[in-house]
Amino acid sequence: MEIEGKFCYVSPIPTGLEMLVRYLTSLLVAAGFAGTALAAPNPAEAPALPAGFERFAAEIEAFAARDLERKTPGDTLFVGSSSIRLWDTAQSFPRRAAMNRGFGGATTPDVLHYYGQVVARYQPASIIVYVGENDIAAGAAPETVSADVLTLLTRIRKDNPRARIAYLSMKPSPSRWNLWAKMDAVNNAVRAKSGRASFDYLDVGSALLNTDGMPDRQFFTADGLHMNASGYSLWTAAVDAYLGSPDAKTTPGAKAPAVVRTTAL
Image 1 (cartoon, one colour):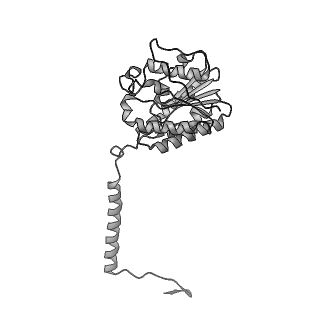
Image 2 (cartoon, helix red, strand yellow):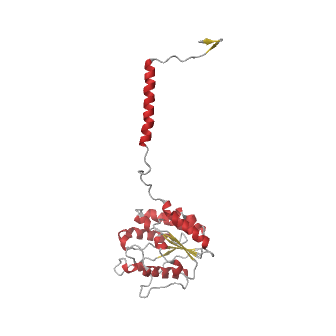
Image 3 (tube, helix red, strand yellow):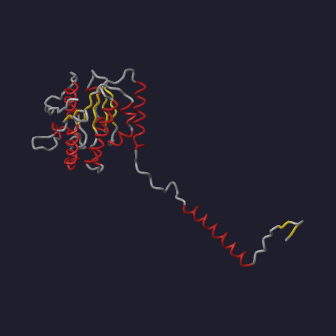
């Protein structure tokens, strides 16, 4: 078709077959969108995401709130899992400005994730670390746990070149006795590196065993996992001897703590 010397393209009128094809195609496209809408998952029925670092958010926020209330900087930092969290460090070490940054259920990767909030923001004279037990309980291999623990301790040393740093050996709990061989493997691996990595290793587990080499239940709560006041009394005496302060309080009749094994920094 020519208009004023120019050509203008006009699409041909579609045949009946072409119109049918276009109609059917539009129906298929519409059905596809409808199917997609119908297939969209219902948020109420979607499976919950696996618990991750966010499960500790409330505890980490609580630490920040305590920091705002603290009038003097802490002298000794205790960091790790529930064995630290349940330890009344303020009462156990009254002559030290003890800061307890233990959060229940924490693994070494959890502590590394929140390192900035529970370690890096402080400059204590001493740092006491207890981690690894929950890692093993969650199925991590001893080699993996050892590497993670050493990564944490090395990082702490780098950021605190003048501080005293001690790793507390994993404890032999009655409820996790079946995992003790793996925990002890981690203990031995960390102890072997204690000199070269510039941290000390404190054996706080031996005193929790009875004469036949089994966990002594008198030092544990009914759950067979966490320690009671008598158990913490042993830990307090061991850490107190390491720190060199006169704060230790022992329970009458309790066993003396195992000799603290340290490596000079």
